[in-house]
Image 1 (cartoon, rainbow, N blue to C red):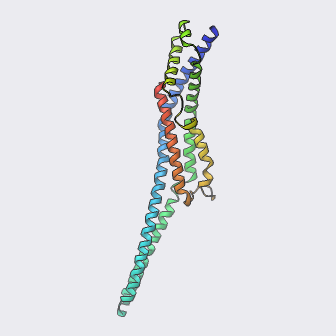
Image 2 (cartoon, rainbow, N blue to C red):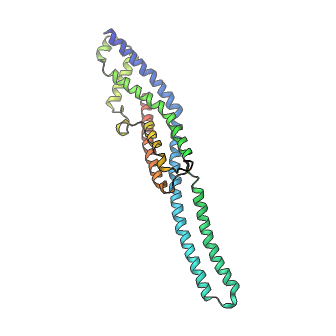
Image 3 (cartoon, one colour):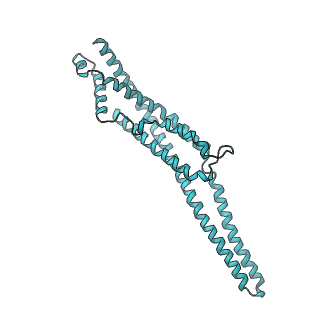
Length: 249
């Protein structure tokens, strides 16, 4: 009985200390983690905007060129011989319109290439991993210890004079277990760290070989969708970490 009481007290005190650490970690890091997720979301929004802009410019540029070309042909066919100057102006003007549309589209495309690069995404991934790893591991440690507390006969230990603080930790453990909050929301309890590592392994699929920086044009839509899925899963995990923080505080 003495050995069991000692083990119970030790496990309960470890839970108490880990709760304090978890509280400090979440208090200092939660807002920064949320900010990084917002930056990931901004990447998706920019990529989607680029896709819409490029599509719109493609349609507008093609239409303008076609209209300009038709105007030039009609102008040549109908213009009097004595209006050679006007004819040149008409033809050149149509050409300028067409060229300007194409030139503007090229500038937009060139600017779009600079919107997302590998270095930026890697920094976000590394920053998130470094901030989320400790809270996740700390919470996992707390939950494992709480499961150990549940193995004890709390009623028997209480009658034998167990410390009130240790009994409170056991009650908290039972309350969490009964409310089904002791398992992460993500299927299989996948951590944010493991999700980000998997995402890193896919970088070569999305970025060009040239300096490994630029996002492949053909993969922009796919990359946007992948980032969107990642952010959704990371947000669910962060919500779970926050929920547990509020419950354990």
